[in-house]
Length: 505
Image 1 (cartoon, helix red, strand yellow):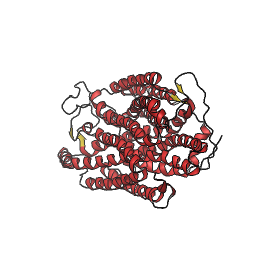
Image 2: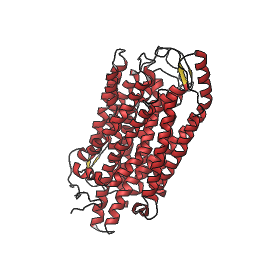
Image 3: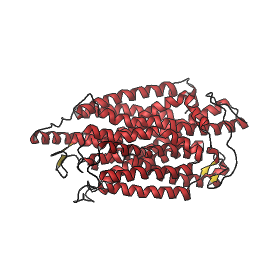
Image 4: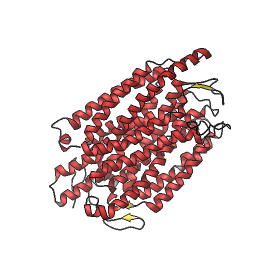
């Protein structure tokens, strides 16, 4: 039996029910209450736990440059702010581009098998990082190449989400995908909190002192390389492949012809793109606008102002812990409504940041007294700046969770509207919708992650030479983008009379 999707996609045939060697599950029925309670739930939870671990590690490696770039100058590398922002942006671009093949790999090779491969690939950026930072003569172009390989960690998110989407019933997808994503997103906060301590560059709230032997960035690389090995072994022994998740590439790419794939991708740029972009840029934003180093480029030179290492992780932490909240609220009230409120919060929050930036004083390039006065004046504004920025991060997290809930809900609505209840056609349509939504997760995630590249590049606006002016210009652009996303969400998914608004996605 075959079924043509409501979007005009090619027919979707049911996956062959044949057992294979290894940890393959041929019979998987999460929508069957008896099966779910007796068999499905424990297996799904076990796979979710180790999926979170692997994805968490991937995010940590993906964002390792976001915080380490701020220490490169202290370690003796003479890079300009423009070069540092580019180093921060490159992994985000690569991570966005490879999300599509990573998603397709789940349907091709199996979720457990691909988790092993993707975790093993993290050895490339971690070992390359350890090599580059221990050699003062490492050229900038080689740093860029190694930073690009860190994008492998960004691909882990797409394959992990596509895999977990198959394990859970529709009523629990929002919460399950929210937890999976939040566990991964927390990798950003953890790397930003722990890397400065691991490398000896900063203390930790007075509990740990900065190393007196200087900064050693390679230590973080060795730690995460070890975790990558653990992730491979965990996937090998504790995760499973689902036969129902098998799909050929043509079937998965059929979602490209569904116009709502691109509408949701735009919304995901506004939510996840903002989360990953702001997470990558925040350490440098704090350092450039609230801190000043005497004798820049001189290892060990003293600095004054706000130490970024004590605060940069807070944004990613807030955005991560609010993502499951967004998924939970979406399960209860509908993803579109929650997404609309998230964008309203982003508009207000971004305007608030612009207001705080107007209170800052540009740090002059010369004059010790003038520099100290500017840093002291800006430090007084920092609590307000950080507080409003954390509100923005909270909105990105809620929007991430609610937008990802909309993806399977939309494809399920297509299946329900096209078939009659209780028929074999309905059952097959729902399975096809799950496959398409898992593929859409990767496509939408890839496009959305491009925001993680665009945001740091916008902060490095080439037409603005002064850092504070560039920051103001960037947030004005972001505010306009959030207004656009808010209008699109309302017009397409919330306005009365629209197909998906009536379906309550």
